[in-house]
Length: 530
Image (cartoon, rainbow, N blue to C red; front, top):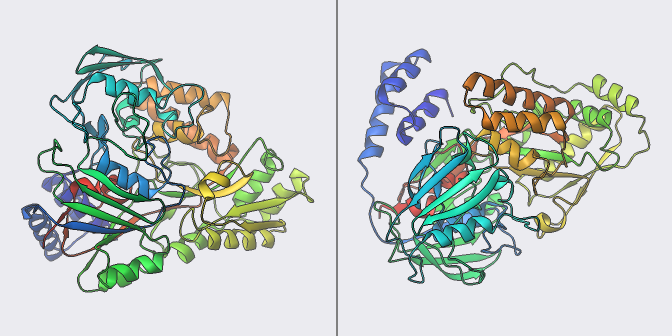
């Protein structure tokens, strides 16, 4: 993707206006012909009128036999995308990367951003006919809270002190301290709304555009239109069929042969071929998706900070980006904030492969006989095993006796992730920097895969959330990135662009930097042109 393509995509999404696009294009030195062509494409896109009807066939990677409709359990693309067809949240992560009301019709924050009042839409019905009320919202949010909660959404609500019902269609959320980014936290894909007291996850009930017809975890999901869906201009399809295809080659072949209409996780090596194939469209956007090799800093030998630094210097990031991702992305710097984020610390020196420094810190660690094993599986992301092998080779070139252990794909997220001492995984990113740092590195976060706990970091995180002054917030967030870069347990070598693809007959599938498939909202926003 060229920079002109990127800004063209931003214009299509409405994230910038035509005047800003023209300024950006001129600054890039784009020709008048290229600018005119880009604007023509944007105008044609805007002129498309969604059509109703048809069944969209999706071939998605990121599914497992352990998948469930339980809103607290989602870890990967299949259930994230499917759930947003069946459920809705208070807040939607919009295409421009900003939070906007969903089941909430309006929001009233206090001046100190500590109290948030949500006015709910009236007349919204669940798929079982029940009308949405404040009780449903209270139950759904509280489902993720509590000491015993194992929900992936728990960390996003860690700042909540209390949730109360003001009237049947009004809810107040009180935070422990001011948080200017709280609405971003509510875009967490776990924070979806179900009826008060709901527990029958085999038969999901939501307010979304679809109802679940068949659910075969890790294999296939069938959805049918919900006639009571409340959103104008959304929910165009009669149904959707999701086929879990975890192999990237098989996904592309299914798309190319016409068995599938749309796919996620296009192999970066295949992206140029997709772009050149008649009838197919590549949808690409830079964002927060990044690979992680997570070292649990409270488990030996990774409790040794010198060993962690040695392994960071022993990681050849340029090689990983080029060999595994075909250059479709940017280098990572061992913290989770992407270059597209307004709070990205661009003054932090980019760590590079340095065999001499790696060897120095490894010798300093005194762990010459340690078991340095990285657990890998392509269930985490396409190429995870290959990345492990590249890391193993570059580490051994620095005289570090690292090895990899290949784990089965099925059940990886339940049996290996969060359990092993050093495990490769990935993160899809989050809408706000403070949200990403809270969910993955907060001391009490259930998904804190590196077991990171640092007093200075925790204070900075709390200060950043409560600070309304942008300059001060920036300083806090920059320092947290620097701390993780130097002391943290995460090796983050690459941020990969989101790359999906579809047939020409699919409409509504636009590039978004938050998550694949229109930030997980593809089922609600897509339509079939023919």
